[in-house]
Amino acid sequence: MSYSEFAKRMDSLSIEVLRRRATKKWAMRLDGQLLDGAWIAEADFGTAPEVEAALSKAIANNFLGYMPSWLVERTLHECCRFQGEEFGFEIAEECFGIAPNVLSVLHQTIEVLTDPGTPVIVPTPAYMPFLSIPGLHNREVIEIPSPVSPQGRYQLDLGAIAEAFARGAQLLVLCNPWNPTGQTFTSSELAALAEVLSHSKKALVFSDEIHSPLILPGNRHVPFASVSALTASRTVTATAASKGWNIPGLNCAQWYVVDPLLRERFAPAAEKLSEGATPLGALAATVAYSNGRPWLNDLVAYVAKNASHLQRLLANSDTKLHFSTPQATYLSWFDASAYQVEDPAAQIAARGRVAVNAGSTLGKDYSQFFRFNLASPTNVLEDMAKRVIASF
Image 1: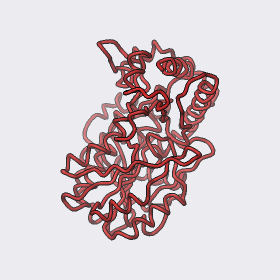
Image 2: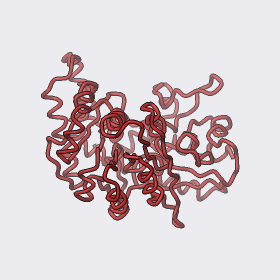
Image 3: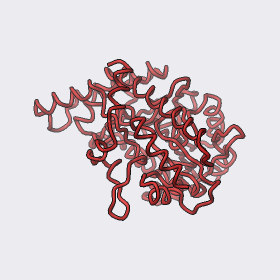
């Protein structure tokens, strides 16, 4: 399938078709009435034809039993190969493991690798579960709001992070690329974070790299564990094909720990995590990594086109909304603080009938922000964006 064919197929999808799908993205309601979906991290584009064909064949062949070991090995092999070919990070296959989802890896990282009662550092704005999961392990969350440069770039507050480690925190949760800001991190930014780690012997990083397949043109993903020998020895990385190839409901993620000593400490977690992934999810991930990259490239190009289209739409309106153009992911971050409304997301839902994520759920200091999903057909995206603009 060429890009033009991909775009033509996506552009043909109407908002009525998407509403009838009734996926979680399109099933949000307010006062009993459906809202159109621009919130949860699902895409409206289906998945790669190769993945779809493999799943159809598997179901036809009644491949619906328990997970076979050969499939786990194949999935991890393809994930390992993808990391090397896409990001230039060559990792031994023995470093990889399988899991049901990225968040399950975070749960186990907290439980197995950190001392009971120690706080967890979460730079904000942050993916919502990062703010709630530590509490399930009786851990304090140290939220660290991220300053914004004059150029509009969010930056990790390294001083505050260092202070939090000094207070006894042992784990920092890094979202790389950064959901919800849509930013990639540069090598120098990650090296500066590594310098902070070097001053605390027990400091570890959980790096969520689930959005790494979705790097928009002109940008680059740097795995945190690849930055230095120190980061390789202090990082648990979780990734998946679920965002890039739009298969989040199939429950299969992958993780890797490069350092053998850290991997040995993580072994109890690895055993628990191996029990939750599904065979269909593993099969889909395997095919996505091995044969689905042309489709992924088309998806990324389409999302980049949507981001540019939205930027033009905003520029040609009189809106005071500020939009951060993403470098990665199909998630975008809006600043509505110029309007000084109590809850922008609620106002958008009530007036525009569009569901977005409230900024207050992504960090204490972000009540005037909201997250907006770009992974819709361009005509649908424009319709929803116009209603968002008209809500203020």
